[in-house]
Length: 242
Image 1 (cartoon, rainbow, N blue to C red):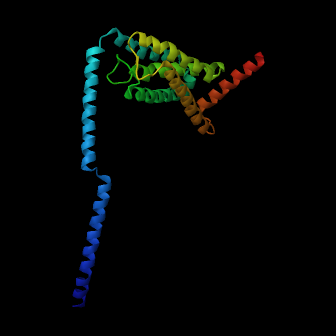
Image 2 (cartoon, one colour):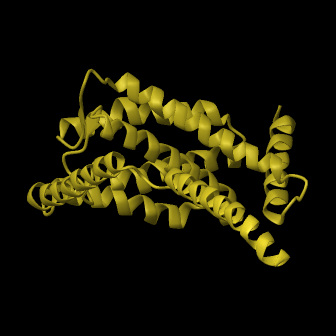
């Protein structure tokens, strides 16, 4: 009888506990579940994105594929890769590759921002989409990689020669593309804005590379020893020449 009475007393407590636990579970679930309004907005954006992707594909097939600008874009994509294959200093391949990948990533962000905000556009493309695949993946990163390699090999000032390259790209290369209808500026964007973007690119890519060189200098891997030896010999040769 005592055990039965005890059970009757405990049942309401357990019921309240279970009710509170279920309430907490529902509240926690609501934190991780999208509301109907948010889900509806997300589905609309996904639908619009899908339509935009199909529109870019249709535009690419209609107005880009097979044109002489398309083949020039293919040349801009492939020729730097061939040049890099023969010109790359394989002793410093990891360092140069890391720097080039940094240039690629940062330039892709810059180019993506500009095209998504309609600051500039590329009427002719290697692949469908708003950005220039040839410039983002090949031409721009490899151009900076070769300049970086040259400054290391000859002990020159990276920032000076990277700035010269940035000026060439902003005030010679991009205007040439513009004259051929392969690049268009919008919303008051100028070639000076492009030049400033390239300067940001040169600084951030170099600083990111320097940061990782600093972080791993204590481990002193073989390629880093080779880089230090090469730089030391270069500077010693310049001092002797003086």
